[in-house]
Image (cartoon, rainbow, N blue to C red):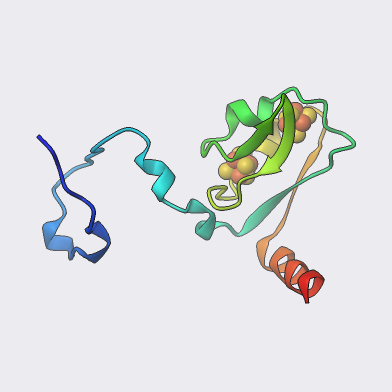
Length: 110
Ligand code: SF4
Ligand code: SF4
């Protein structure tokens, strides 16, 4: 069965089928869970030893690794759960208030 969900954003609740339906693999990427975040992870690169515990534990695959180097966070998908900070053996990740972090971003880019 092929399920056309291309206009799902316009559906009323009546059109949604009962139960959980995952029409194909990888659709979670379409959900920008970063919008839920109230806390933001901040990386202290000086402390990071590239053990990738954060990558393994992150439930949103929001840890960016490139060339075997931990590069930071995909903030479109990081929902601020803090698991990476909890699991990091070097305390290289700190969770900060999202609103304050946004305000700092805005004043830095102004
Ligand atoms: S705070 Fe949670 S979702 Fe965000 S990068 Fe860390 S483990 Fe992943
Ligand atoms: S868990 Fe900590 S030390 Fe390990 S890669 Fe992530 S930030 Fe770096």
